[in-house]
Length: 102
Image (cartoon, rainbow, N blue to C red; front, side):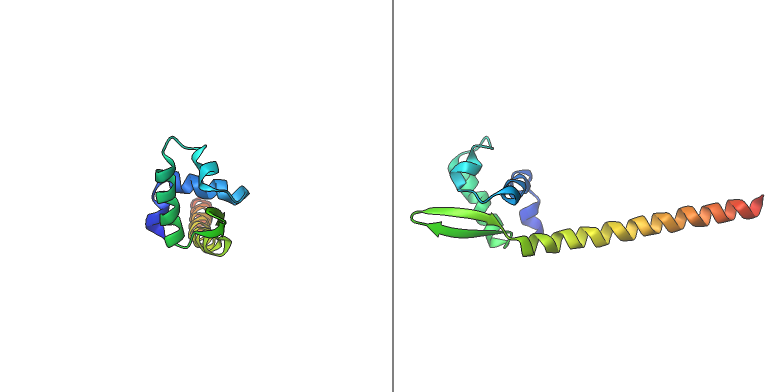
């Protein structure tokens, strides 16, 4: 999953799919790459379980896999909240130490 997220274009595709389901041709309008290039990125995202693919006739409609992306969001929330809590403790401890010196 993390390797799939390492590419700027794929992250941008996820942001576009967050707002609405799209066909590859619709996604391609937002990028300076061929339809084959878009399809390659979508396959990588699908293989990482970040997007879902639904066949409609001969076309494929892509949507964001909200369960998988929620996992990523929760990971970052935990990572950053821990850092913010550590920063808060550091600042509070520093203030206490400065108060004791006075």
